[in-house]
Image 1 (cartoon, rainbow, N blue to C red):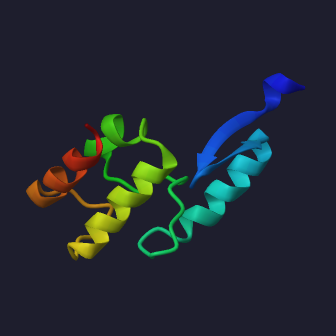
Image 2 (cartoon, helix red, strand yellow; image 1 turned 90 degrees about the vertical axis):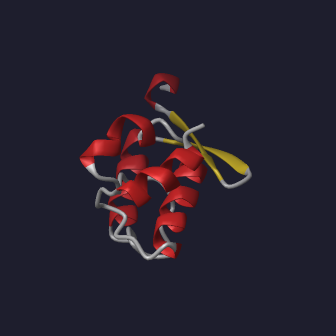
Length: 91
């Protein structure tokens, strides 16, 4: 049974999620993309940034997402401004 569990780091607490639970949370999070309520689970980025962003923690994804929003950018687009902001979170 332990092999079917995934560990997820959310805020300062570490919780264990089953694959089904993670899938359900991801679907909810998809509906939150582009809002301040985005949790960092669902993939929000443009195809161009897939390799660098998919390996980030949920916390860093959320921070990057929120920084893009704060800059007035559409989180799913690609531009030089996106790249500058994203690079702050991938190092």
